[in-house]
Image (cartoon, rainbow, N blue to C red; front, side):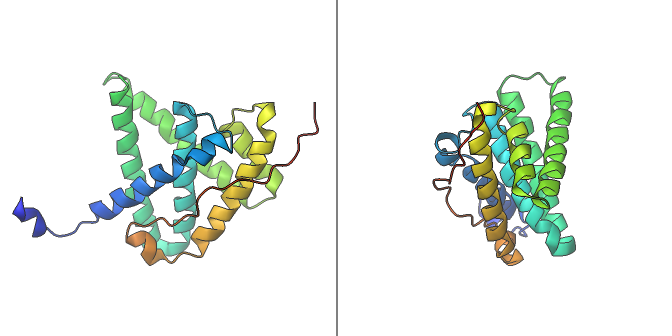
Length: 186
């Protein structure tokens, strides 16, 4: 036990804190009560993907150090997803196939969200409606509100120095009540 104090810090604790913060943020009850994200395995998965995307989107501005930190957090995400699949009873032979789907979903979302951030609110809201809300037409107002929230989080992370992430911190403002846009289509 005492030998662990003499080990070189390889950054695992930092990565676990950072990934833990992603998971904690994604579990904020406001996303499920106020923003209308389905409180299901799929809904929670989408929120983890969204919060991981936020960190990776921010880290791409930090050169090689950001890339390495992002890769290590992504590796922790993959290990967690693998463990969750096994815990849910997915068989050992099926886990690699499911993990390919998880990776495909992740990279697909990252590409879509990254592109949508570079365009207007409508594109981001549409991407969220498609991915987070499974194209539910009654969730358009929530997807717009979540798009506004996403932009707020991007701005908050942009103002955060890299050193904060390197310490394992992911300072994001708590999810509050969004401003909904009325859905005029019937």
